[in-house]
Image (cartoon, rainbow over all chains, first blue to last red; front, top):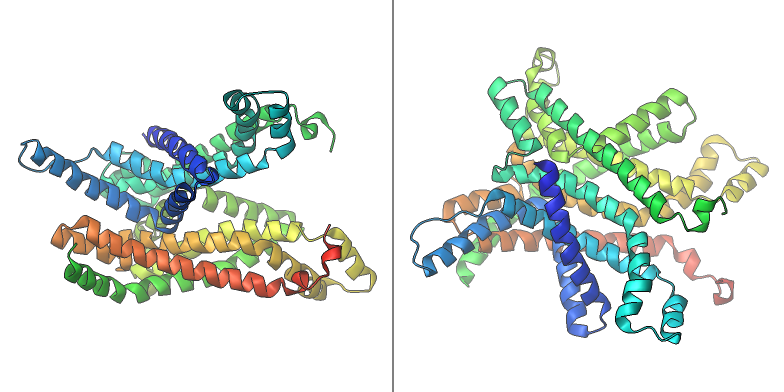
Length: 217
Length: 234
């Protein structure tokens, strides 16, 4: 469950992050401003607060929509959706910065060379920008994954039965608080160190054409 | 928009601000000292101390802060020797537990940041210092620490902002800081948006002030770099 929430959240975040990064790089003053507002707010406000806001605020929004459609009474947002959305929005603000940094790291000369040999905008994006941005963004993306994995523990406040919530419930019902929280913590450690290795391997693979991977530098 | 409700909410939340600030200040300062000890163990050359520091950093960076906090708050109370021990009057206070776990956690992150700062000290400067006979503490105080501090500052300011946001987790172990009070206000009034808007503004302003202070410190510490003649810039 923890992994599912984190993966969905990261996917939402990747889409949001790409949009916001594009907005911040577009040069259009309004879009740049909106992008900056997004990254400032969601990186500056505590994660817990955002999760509460989406969970409770989302529920009241859904209830309002339900009432408009003639349904009386309270409608709740599913905690999985709310949690994934909240963590997704947060990770989106971090990923936007990651993508932006990666785009800026693409050498200007390569873009100029691509237009010089007559590549169109779309082709240039697909052949030159995209592969390099993905490569440069990979380390930052790994960081965001680790952050989101740990943020996903906060979703337990909405009652979603992920790793944190489950260890909390088990600890409460058996009164073995120390044992269950230690085990929960150890499981998170395993998750983070495993994903660290996956990202290391992915980075090595993505960089296999770079000089440092070939024994130079 | 109900201005009256917003302002009364703001006043209620601002009353909880000292708790948030106290959590923040205490945990950052304790965490910073702890981080210095850990980084000293990590780079000190003693294999066992370095191993311990590595393990510490791994554990505290790899697991969520929330689980660490619950471990301290609920987990420690399970043991009789802690319950009967001399520290129990302190450890049963949620505030102390929150500060303790925040400090332990930030120490892990900060130690890595400081280590990065130390590693970026140019080896030539250390060699030069050794050549003119500096050693041990003098070397650290005059050469390594000032340079490492400057390199570590940008990353450390990010960590400090993260800490400010992490203080909101203390509400889950029943410390009544800004998020906790906001949560309670919501359960009384059912007005989610307004209350959280006020809380978010408070945190944004706090983080803005912290970032400005850090930028000012950085500016102050890099005076000698700006004074350099433009020709020296490659």
